[in-house]
Length: 462
Image (tube, rainbow, N blue to C red; front, side):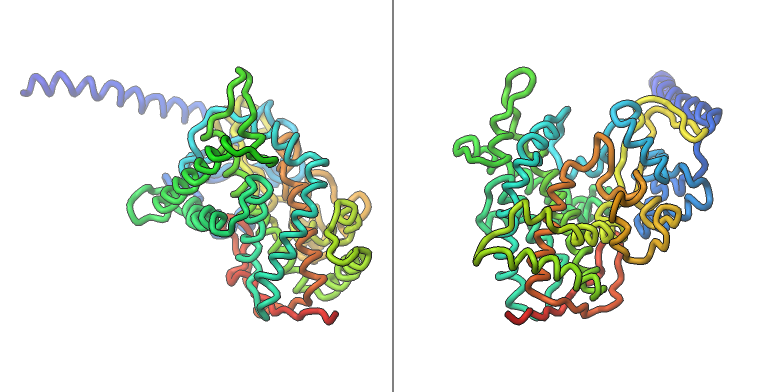
Protein backbone atom coordinates (compact mmCIF):
# COMPACT_ATOMS: atom_id res chain seq x y z
CA UNK A 1 0.00 0.00 0.00
CA UNK A 2 2.81 2.39 0.97
CA UNK A 3 4.55 1.60 -2.30
CA UNK A 4 1.39 2.42 -4.27
CA UNK A 5 0.99 5.73 -2.45
CA UNK A 6 4.66 6.51 -3.00
CA UNK A 7 4.12 5.85 -6.69
CA UNK A 8 1.00 7.97 -7.19
CA UNK A 9 1.86 10.97 -5.01
CA UNK A 10 4.60 12.21 -7.38
CA UNK A 11 2.23 11.74 -10.33
CA UNK A 12 -0.25 14.06 -8.61
CA UNK A 13 2.29 16.55 -7.30
CA UNK A 14 4.13 17.00 -10.59
CA UNK A 15 1.24 18.53 -12.60
CA UNK A 16 0.08 20.46 -9.54
CA UNK A 17 3.57 21.89 -9.07
CA UNK A 18 3.79 22.78 -12.76
CA UNK A 19 0.42 24.55 -12.50
CA UNK A 20 1.55 26.60 -9.49
CA UNK A 21 4.83 27.37 -11.22
CA UNK A 22 2.99 28.64 -14.31
CA UNK A 23 0.86 30.96 -12.12
CA UNK A 24 3.98 32.32 -10.42
CA UNK A 25 5.62 32.89 -13.80
CA UNK A 26 2.57 34.76 -15.09
CA UNK A 27 2.42 36.91 -11.98
CA UNK A 28 6.12 37.69 -12.07
CA UNK A 29 5.77 38.55 -15.76
CA UNK A 30 2.93 40.96 -14.94
CA UNK A 31 4.97 42.43 -12.08
CA UNK A 32 7.77 43.35 -14.47
CA UNK A 33 5.33 45.29 -16.62
CA UNK A 34 4.01 48.74 -15.84
CA UNK A 35 0.37 47.85 -15.27
CA UNK A 36 -2.33 50.46 -14.64
CA UNK A 37 -2.69 51.56 -11.02
CA UNK A 38 -5.65 50.23 -9.09
CA UNK A 39 -6.76 47.43 -6.82
CA UNK A 40 -8.37 44.04 -7.23
CA UNK A 41 -10.34 43.75 -4.00
CA UNK A 42 -11.09 40.42 -2.35
CA UNK A 43 -9.98 37.03 -3.71
CA UNK A 44 -12.62 35.55 -6.03
CA UNK A 45 -15.12 38.35 -5.32
CA UNK A 46 -12.80 41.09 -6.60
CA UNK A 47 -14.53 44.47 -6.46
CA UNK A 48 -17.90 43.26 -7.73
CA UNK A 49 -19.84 44.37 -4.65
CA UNK A 50 -18.44 47.92 -4.67
CA UNK A 51 -19.15 48.24 -8.38
CA UNK A 52 -22.68 46.83 -8.14
CA UNK A 53 -23.57 49.13 -5.23
CA UNK A 54 -22.90 52.27 -7.31
CA UNK A 55 -21.10 52.02 -10.67
CA UNK A 56 -20.96 55.82 -10.99
CA UNK A 57 -19.37 56.32 -7.55
CA UNK A 58 -17.01 53.39 -8.13
CA UNK A 59 -15.70 54.82 -11.41
CA UNK A 60 -15.36 58.45 -10.29
CA UNK A 61 -13.53 57.48 -7.08
CA UNK A 62 -11.13 55.22 -8.97
CA UNK A 63 -10.40 57.95 -11.52
CA UNK A 64 -9.72 60.43 -8.72
CA UNK A 65 -7.53 58.03 -6.74
CA UNK A 66 -5.57 56.29 -9.49
CA UNK A 67 -5.74 57.99 -12.89
CA UNK A 68 -8.22 59.93 -15.03
CA UNK A 69 -7.07 57.86 -18.04
CA UNK A 70 -7.11 54.21 -16.97
CA UNK A 71 -7.22 52.03 -13.85
CA UNK A 72 -7.20 48.33 -13.11
CA UNK A 73 -9.71 46.37 -11.06
CA UNK A 74 -11.14 42.87 -10.82
CA UNK A 75 -14.72 42.31 -11.94
CA UNK A 76 -16.54 39.08 -12.77
CA UNK A 77 -13.45 37.09 -11.80
CA UNK A 78 -11.30 38.82 -14.43
CA UNK A 79 -8.36 41.21 -14.41
CA UNK A 80 -9.81 44.31 -15.97
CA UNK A 81 -8.51 47.62 -17.30
CA UNK A 82 -11.09 50.40 -17.29
CA UNK A 83 -10.51 53.06 -19.95
CA UNK A 84 -11.71 56.53 -18.97
CA UNK A 85 -12.57 59.84 -20.56
CA UNK A 86 -13.07 60.78 -24.20
CA UNK A 87 -9.53 59.66 -25.09
CA UNK A 88 -10.08 56.25 -23.53
CA UNK A 89 -13.42 55.83 -25.32
CA UNK A 90 -11.89 56.82 -28.64
CA UNK A 91 -8.97 54.40 -28.20
CA UNK A 92 -11.26 51.48 -27.40
CA UNK A 93 -13.83 52.21 -30.08
CA UNK A 94 -11.19 52.86 -32.76
CA UNK A 95 -9.27 49.64 -32.12
CA UNK A 96 -12.17 47.23 -32.20
CA UNK A 97 -11.10 44.08 -34.10
CA UNK A 98 -7.49 45.32 -34.00
CA UNK A 99 -6.56 45.15 -30.31
CA UNK A 100 -9.91 44.04 -28.86
CA UNK A 101 -12.60 41.47 -29.40
CA UNK A 102 -16.12 41.38 -27.98
CA UNK A 103 -16.39 39.52 -24.68
CA UNK A 104 -19.30 38.36 -22.55
CA UNK A 105 -18.93 36.93 -19.02
CA UNK A 106 -19.26 33.16 -18.86
CA UNK A 107 -21.90 33.49 -16.13
CA UNK A 108 -24.07 35.49 -18.54
CA UNK A 109 -23.50 33.15 -21.49
CA UNK A 110 -24.45 30.14 -19.37
CA UNK A 111 -27.80 31.68 -18.46
CA UNK A 112 -28.84 33.08 -21.82
CA UNK A 113 -27.43 31.27 -24.81
CA UNK A 114 -26.81 27.98 -26.50
CA UNK A 115 -23.05 27.52 -27.03
CA UNK A 116 -21.96 28.90 -30.41
CA UNK A 117 -18.75 29.66 -32.27
CA UNK A 118 -19.61 32.56 -34.56
CA UNK A 119 -22.42 34.80 -35.69
CA UNK A 120 -23.79 36.40 -38.83
CA UNK A 121 -26.16 38.48 -36.72
CA UNK A 122 -24.76 41.95 -37.44
CA UNK A 123 -24.83 41.46 -41.20
CA UNK A 124 -28.50 40.53 -41.46
CA UNK A 125 -29.45 42.86 -38.62
CA UNK A 126 -28.04 45.92 -40.37
CA UNK A 127 -29.28 44.90 -43.81
CA UNK A 128 -32.80 43.71 -43.09
CA UNK A 129 -33.87 45.00 -39.68
CA UNK A 130 -32.03 48.21 -38.88
CA UNK A 131 -31.48 49.63 -42.34
CA UNK A 132 -33.06 53.06 -42.98
CA UNK A 133 -35.69 51.55 -45.27
CA UNK A 134 -36.71 48.93 -42.73
CA UNK A 135 -36.84 51.46 -39.88
CA UNK A 136 -39.14 53.76 -41.85
CA UNK A 137 -41.66 50.92 -42.05
CA UNK A 138 -41.42 50.32 -38.30
CA UNK A 139 -42.69 53.76 -37.28
CA UNK A 140 -46.44 53.18 -37.96
CA UNK A 141 -46.24 49.75 -36.29
CA UNK A 142 -44.60 51.30 -33.21
CA UNK A 143 -47.25 54.02 -33.10
CA UNK A 144 -50.14 51.59 -33.51
CA UNK A 145 -48.90 49.44 -30.64
CA UNK A 146 -48.20 52.52 -28.48
CA UNK A 147 -51.81 53.68 -28.98
CA UNK A 148 -53.08 50.22 -28.09
CA UNK A 149 -50.77 50.25 -25.05
CA UNK A 150 -52.17 53.63 -23.92
CA UNK A 151 -55.73 52.29 -24.21
CA UNK A 152 -55.03 49.06 -22.32
CA UNK A 153 -52.61 50.16 -19.61
CA UNK A 154 -52.65 53.94 -19.17
CA UNK A 155 -56.10 55.42 -19.80
CA UNK A 156 -58.02 53.15 -17.36
CA UNK A 157 -55.77 54.27 -14.47
CA UNK A 158 -55.17 57.48 -12.55
CA UNK A 159 -51.74 56.27 -11.37
CA UNK A 160 -49.37 54.08 -13.39
CA UNK A 161 -45.91 52.63 -12.79
CA UNK A 162 -43.88 53.59 -15.83
CA UNK A 163 -41.01 51.09 -15.67
CA UNK A 164 -43.03 47.84 -15.71
CA UNK A 165 -45.36 49.26 -18.38
CA UNK A 166 -42.38 50.31 -20.51
CA UNK A 167 -41.02 46.78 -20.28
CA UNK A 168 -44.33 45.38 -21.52
CA UNK A 169 -44.46 47.81 -24.45
CA UNK A 170 -40.86 47.35 -25.65
CA UNK A 171 -41.06 43.57 -25.28
CA UNK A 172 -44.39 43.25 -27.08
CA UNK A 173 -43.03 45.44 -29.86
CA UNK A 174 -39.89 43.30 -30.25
CA UNK A 175 -41.98 40.12 -30.40
CA UNK A 176 -44.25 41.69 -33.02
CA UNK A 177 -41.54 43.18 -35.25
CA UNK A 178 -38.91 40.45 -35.05
CA UNK A 179 -41.00 37.28 -34.74
CA UNK A 180 -44.58 38.27 -35.70
CA UNK A 181 -45.72 36.98 -32.29
CA UNK A 182 -48.80 39.01 -31.35
CA UNK A 183 -50.82 36.59 -29.21
CA UNK A 184 -50.65 38.15 -25.69
CA UNK A 185 -50.55 34.71 -24.08
CA UNK A 186 -47.52 33.65 -26.09
CA UNK A 187 -45.77 36.98 -25.52
CA UNK A 188 -46.35 36.59 -21.77
CA UNK A 189 -44.97 33.07 -21.88
CA UNK A 190 -41.66 34.44 -23.17
CA UNK A 191 -41.78 37.64 -21.13
CA UNK A 192 -42.31 36.22 -17.63
CA UNK A 193 -39.01 34.28 -17.35
CA UNK A 194 -36.97 37.36 -18.33
CA UNK A 195 -37.46 38.93 -14.88
CA UNK A 196 -35.92 35.82 -13.32
CA UNK A 197 -33.06 35.94 -15.82
CA UNK A 198 -32.18 39.59 -15.20
CA UNK A 199 -32.22 39.10 -11.42
CA UNK A 200 -30.00 36.04 -11.72
CA UNK A 201 -27.34 37.39 -14.05
CA UNK A 202 -26.66 40.18 -11.54
CA UNK A 203 -26.35 37.78 -8.60
CA UNK A 204 -23.30 35.84 -7.40
CA UNK A 205 -22.92 33.14 -10.11
CA UNK A 206 -23.20 30.14 -7.77
CA UNK A 207 -25.12 27.30 -9.43
CA UNK A 208 -26.69 25.71 -6.34
CA UNK A 209 -30.34 24.86 -5.57
CA UNK A 210 -32.30 27.82 -4.25
CA UNK A 211 -29.93 30.49 -5.56
CA UNK A 212 -30.98 33.32 -7.88
CA UNK A 213 -28.38 32.14 -10.38
CA UNK A 214 -29.86 28.61 -10.51
CA UNK A 215 -33.33 30.10 -11.06
CA UNK A 216 -31.93 32.27 -13.86
CA UNK A 217 -30.37 29.23 -15.56
CA UNK A 218 -33.71 27.41 -15.37
CA UNK A 219 -35.58 30.46 -16.74
CA UNK A 220 -33.04 30.86 -19.54
CA UNK A 221 -33.57 27.23 -20.52
CA UNK A 222 -37.33 27.79 -20.62
CA UNK A 223 -36.91 30.85 -22.89
CA UNK A 224 -34.63 28.96 -25.28
CA UNK A 225 -37.06 26.02 -25.45
CA UNK A 226 -40.00 28.31 -26.28
CA UNK A 227 -38.00 30.16 -28.94
CA UNK A 228 -36.90 26.84 -30.45
CA UNK A 229 -40.58 25.94 -30.87
CA UNK A 230 -41.23 29.28 -32.60
CA UNK A 231 -38.22 28.84 -34.92
CA UNK A 232 -39.21 25.29 -35.85
CA UNK A 233 -42.76 26.46 -36.57
CA UNK A 234 -41.43 29.32 -38.70
CA UNK A 235 -39.51 26.91 -40.94
CA UNK A 236 -42.92 25.50 -41.88
CA UNK A 237 -44.85 28.80 -42.06
CA UNK A 238 -42.70 31.60 -43.43
CA UNK A 239 -43.62 35.27 -42.86
CA UNK A 240 -42.09 38.64 -43.75
CA UNK A 241 -40.16 39.35 -40.57
CA UNK A 242 -36.64 39.19 -39.11
CA UNK A 243 -37.04 35.61 -37.89
CA UNK A 244 -38.07 34.33 -41.34
CA UNK A 245 -35.00 35.99 -42.85
CA UNK A 246 -32.78 34.39 -40.22
CA UNK A 247 -34.35 31.00 -40.95
CA UNK A 248 -33.59 31.39 -44.67
CA UNK A 249 -30.06 32.73 -44.16
CA UNK A 250 -27.18 30.52 -45.30
CA UNK A 251 -23.63 30.51 -43.96
CA UNK A 252 -20.39 30.60 -45.98
CA UNK A 253 -20.73 26.88 -46.75
CA UNK A 254 -24.26 27.30 -48.11
CA UNK A 255 -25.92 25.66 -45.11
CA UNK A 256 -28.92 27.10 -43.28
CA UNK A 257 -28.24 28.50 -39.81
CA UNK A 258 -29.17 26.00 -37.12
CA UNK A 259 -32.04 26.70 -34.76
CA UNK A 260 -29.84 27.21 -31.71
CA UNK A 261 -27.83 29.96 -33.37
CA UNK A 262 -31.01 31.70 -34.50
CA UNK A 263 -32.39 31.52 -30.94
CA UNK A 264 -29.22 33.14 -29.61
CA UNK A 265 -29.65 36.08 -31.96
CA UNK A 266 -33.31 36.56 -31.02
CA UNK A 267 -32.44 36.46 -27.30
CA UNK A 268 -29.98 39.36 -27.76
CA UNK A 269 -32.73 41.49 -29.27
CA UNK A 270 -35.34 40.54 -26.67
CA UNK A 271 -32.96 41.21 -23.78
CA UNK A 272 -32.18 44.69 -25.12
CA UNK A 273 -35.91 45.38 -25.44
CA UNK A 274 -36.69 44.07 -21.95
CA UNK A 275 -33.98 46.04 -20.15
CA UNK A 276 -32.15 48.88 -21.87
CA UNK A 277 -34.86 50.37 -24.10
CA UNK A 278 -37.50 50.24 -21.39
CA UNK A 279 -35.04 51.90 -18.99
CA UNK A 280 -34.41 54.67 -21.51
CA UNK A 281 -38.15 55.32 -21.92
CA UNK A 282 -38.60 55.40 -18.14
CA UNK A 283 -35.75 57.89 -17.78
CA UNK A 284 -37.21 60.24 -20.38
CA UNK A 285 -40.70 60.18 -18.84
CA UNK A 286 -39.15 60.70 -15.41
CA UNK A 287 -37.52 63.93 -16.60
CA UNK A 288 -40.68 65.11 -18.38
CA UNK A 289 -42.57 64.72 -15.10
CA UNK A 290 -39.79 66.38 -13.12
CA UNK A 291 -39.35 69.50 -15.26
CA UNK A 292 -42.65 71.18 -16.32
CA UNK A 293 -40.89 73.75 -18.53
CA UNK A 294 -39.22 70.93 -20.48
CA UNK A 295 -42.54 69.09 -20.73
CA UNK A 296 -44.24 72.22 -22.09
CA UNK A 297 -41.77 72.59 -24.95
CA UNK A 298 -42.04 68.90 -25.84
CA UNK A 299 -45.84 69.17 -25.67
CA UNK A 300 -45.87 72.09 -28.14
CA UNK A 301 -43.67 70.21 -30.60
CA UNK A 302 -45.67 66.99 -30.35
CA UNK A 303 -49.08 68.67 -30.55
CA UNK A 304 -48.03 70.48 -33.73
CA UNK A 305 -47.32 67.07 -35.26
CA UNK A 306 -50.56 65.54 -33.89
CA UNK A 307 -52.66 68.40 -35.25
CA UNK A 308 -51.15 67.95 -38.71
CA UNK A 309 -52.47 64.37 -38.89
CA UNK A 310 -55.86 63.17 -40.02
CA UNK A 311 -58.19 61.19 -37.71
CA UNK A 312 -56.55 57.85 -36.90
CA UNK A 313 -53.51 58.62 -39.08
CA UNK A 314 -50.36 56.99 -37.73
CA UNK A 315 -46.95 58.58 -37.27
CA UNK A 316 -44.46 58.33 -40.12
CA UNK A 317 -40.71 58.69 -40.52
CA UNK A 318 -41.23 62.31 -41.64
CA UNK A 319 -43.00 63.05 -38.34
CA UNK A 320 -40.08 61.57 -36.39
CA UNK A 321 -37.67 63.86 -38.25
CA UNK A 322 -39.63 66.88 -36.96
CA UNK A 323 -39.07 65.92 -33.30
CA UNK A 324 -35.84 67.92 -32.93
CA UNK A 325 -36.36 69.32 -29.44
CA UNK A 326 -37.86 66.05 -28.16
CA UNK A 327 -34.76 64.16 -29.29
CA UNK A 328 -32.50 66.67 -27.50
CA UNK A 329 -34.54 66.06 -24.35
CA UNK A 330 -34.21 62.30 -24.80
CA UNK A 331 -30.45 62.55 -25.25
CA UNK A 332 -30.04 64.69 -22.15
CA UNK A 333 -32.05 62.07 -20.26
CA UNK A 334 -29.76 59.33 -21.62
CA UNK A 335 -26.78 61.33 -20.37
CA UNK A 336 -28.11 61.60 -16.82
CA UNK A 337 -29.84 58.21 -16.62
CA UNK A 338 -27.93 55.97 -19.03
CA UNK A 339 -29.74 52.68 -19.67
CA UNK A 340 -26.44 50.75 -19.72
CA UNK A 341 -23.25 51.33 -17.78
CA UNK A 342 -20.80 50.31 -20.53
CA UNK A 343 -19.42 47.19 -22.17
CA UNK A 344 -16.58 44.70 -21.96
CA UNK A 345 -13.89 43.70 -24.44
CA UNK A 346 -10.94 41.30 -24.38
CA UNK A 347 -7.38 42.30 -25.31
CA UNK A 348 -6.35 40.05 -28.21
CA UNK A 349 -2.73 41.22 -28.06
CA UNK A 350 -0.50 43.05 -25.60
CA UNK A 351 -0.36 46.82 -26.07
CA UNK A 352 0.43 50.04 -24.23
CA UNK A 353 -1.89 52.92 -23.43
CA UNK A 354 -1.16 56.12 -21.48
CA UNK A 355 2.23 54.66 -20.55
CA UNK A 356 0.78 51.43 -19.13
CA UNK A 357 0.93 47.87 -20.45
CA UNK A 358 -2.28 45.91 -21.00
CA UNK A 359 -1.40 42.18 -21.24
CA UNK A 360 -3.03 39.91 -23.78
CA UNK A 361 -6.10 38.20 -22.32
CA UNK A 362 -6.95 41.02 -19.90
CA UNK A 363 -10.52 42.23 -20.10
CA UNK A 364 -11.23 45.89 -20.77
CA UNK A 365 -14.19 48.07 -19.88
CA UNK A 366 -15.50 51.41 -21.08
CA UNK A 367 -18.19 53.21 -19.14
CA UNK A 368 -20.53 56.16 -19.54
CA UNK A 369 -19.64 57.21 -15.99
CA UNK A 370 -16.20 58.53 -16.93
CA UNK A 371 -17.68 61.27 -19.15
CA UNK A 372 -21.46 61.76 -18.78
CA UNK A 373 -21.21 63.60 -15.46
CA UNK A 374 -17.64 64.77 -15.83
CA UNK A 375 -17.60 68.61 -15.55
CA UNK A 376 -14.71 68.72 -18.03
CA UNK A 377 -17.07 67.20 -20.62
CA UNK A 378 -20.40 68.67 -19.50
CA UNK A 379 -20.34 71.89 -17.43
CA UNK A 380 -22.77 71.77 -14.50
CA UNK A 381 -23.22 68.06 -15.17
CA UNK A 382 -26.18 67.55 -12.80
CA UNK A 383 -28.27 70.23 -14.52
CA UNK A 384 -30.85 68.99 -17.04
CA UNK A 385 -30.15 71.04 -20.16
CA UNK A 386 -31.28 69.79 -23.59
CA UNK A 387 -29.53 72.76 -25.26
CA UNK A 388 -26.25 70.84 -24.81
CA UNK A 389 -27.24 68.93 -27.93
CA UNK A 390 -27.98 71.91 -30.17
CA UNK A 391 -25.65 72.69 -33.05
CA UNK A 392 -22.62 70.39 -33.12
CA UNK A 393 -23.51 69.03 -29.67
CA UNK A 394 -21.09 67.51 -27.15
CA UNK A 395 -17.44 66.86 -27.96
CA UNK A 396 -16.76 63.53 -29.70
CA UNK A 397 -16.61 60.43 -27.49
CA UNK A 398 -18.10 62.18 -24.43
CA UNK A 399 -21.75 61.20 -24.98
CA UNK A 400 -21.66 57.42 -25.34
CA UNK A 401 -24.95 55.75 -24.24
CA UNK A 402 -24.75 53.59 -27.38
CA UNK A 403 -20.98 53.09 -27.41
CA UNK A 404 -19.08 54.01 -30.55
CA UNK A 405 -16.89 52.81 -33.41
CA UNK A 406 -17.50 49.51 -35.22
CA UNK A 407 -19.26 48.09 -32.16
CA UNK A 408 -21.68 50.97 -31.64
CA UNK A 409 -25.01 49.53 -30.57
CA UNK A 410 -26.71 48.50 -33.82
CA UNK A 411 -30.08 49.29 -32.25
CA UNK A 412 -29.33 52.99 -31.67
CA UNK A 413 -31.73 54.24 -34.34
CA UNK A 414 -34.36 51.65 -33.41
CA UNK A 415 -34.19 52.89 -29.80
CA UNK A 416 -34.52 56.51 -30.98
CA UNK A 417 -37.76 55.66 -32.77
CA UNK A 418 -39.19 53.82 -29.75
CA UNK A 419 -38.34 56.73 -27.44
CA UNK A 420 -39.86 59.40 -29.66
CA UNK A 421 -43.00 57.41 -30.49
CA UNK A 422 -43.64 56.79 -26.79
CA UNK A 423 -42.96 60.45 -25.89
CA UNK A 424 -45.50 61.50 -28.53
CA UNK A 425 -48.19 59.14 -27.25
CA UNK A 426 -47.69 60.07 -23.60
CA UNK A 427 -47.47 63.88 -23.78
CA UNK A 428 -50.31 64.28 -26.29
CA UNK A 429 -52.61 62.44 -23.85
CA UNK A 430 -51.48 63.31 -20.32
CA UNK A 431 -49.85 65.77 -18.02
CA UNK A 432 -47.61 63.94 -15.57
CA UNK A 433 -47.22 64.26 -11.81
CA UNK A 434 -44.75 62.30 -9.72
CA UNK A 435 -46.35 60.63 -6.71
CA UNK A 436 -42.87 60.23 -5.16
CA UNK A 437 -41.10 63.52 -6.02
CA UNK A 438 -37.61 62.44 -4.94
CA UNK A 439 -37.76 58.77 -5.86
CA UNK A 440 -34.31 57.21 -5.59
CA UNK A 441 -32.62 55.93 -8.76
CA UNK A 442 -30.47 52.82 -8.28
CA UNK A 443 -28.48 50.77 -10.73
CA UNK A 444 -29.28 47.11 -11.29
CA UNK A 445 -28.77 46.00 -14.89
CA UNK A 446 -29.95 49.49 -15.85
CA UNK A 447 -30.88 52.79 -14.19
CA UNK A 448 -33.93 51.87 -12.10
CA UNK A 449 -36.36 53.97 -10.01
CA UNK A 450 -36.75 51.94 -6.82
CA UNK A 451 -40.57 52.12 -6.91
CA UNK A 452 -40.94 51.79 -10.70
CA UNK A 453 -41.70 55.52 -11.25
CA UNK A 454 -45.37 55.84 -10.20
CA UNK A 455 -47.03 58.82 -11.93
CA UNK A 456 -50.42 60.44 -11.52
CA UNK A 457 -51.98 60.99 -14.94
CA UNK A 458 -53.94 64.14 -15.81
CA UNK A 459 -55.67 63.56 -19.17
CA UNK A 460 -55.83 66.54 -21.52
CA UNK A 461 -59.25 68.00 -22.20
CA UNK A 462 -60.19 67.47 -25.83
